[in-house]
Image 1 (tube, one colour):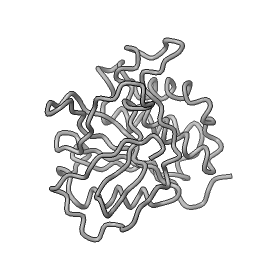
Image 2 (cartoon, one colour):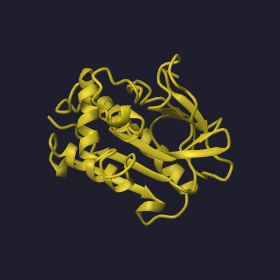
Image 3 (cartoon, one colour):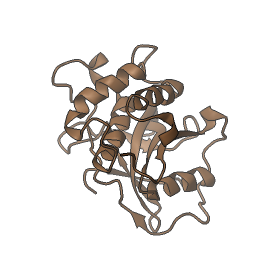
Length: 219
């Protein structure tokens, strides 16, 4: 799975009409570990950096697939800190709020592309939506299948049965037969590194954010 971690869609989801087949279109996205901070510039050692790291994985993928105005993947470390500043990670409070994530990402992207060339869509209970349901999963998988969109998911991070926090990840693949999604998880990159969170699309968070580019790649 190219470094991605896999989680099962909950049994409560019944995605009738969901896209069939297996999509691995984002499996070549980076899988940066949020505690990988060689210069010691991440606030709190990166413990709460899942938001900017998940977003950096997404924009690094876009940079490799036609959106060359974005910083190149080899500049991802600097990109993470830029995004963390825009998103006010560990500034406004612990971690990154839903609104600071969306607004900070939008402000950062506008430094590279005009607003007329992309859309940032947010969906979930914190954006006037309901608890997660089949339509949300179908929407997210549909966006994953689009060649010029990336999907970031905010779910719950669990240690055993105990919910530790909210957690941002980047959606990488979908297998309709096994009802699983592949994710790029900022907390579980590299087999030798920390790997203890189980991610669940739970009712407490359930926000899905997508950086949705129009089909024409900017020049």
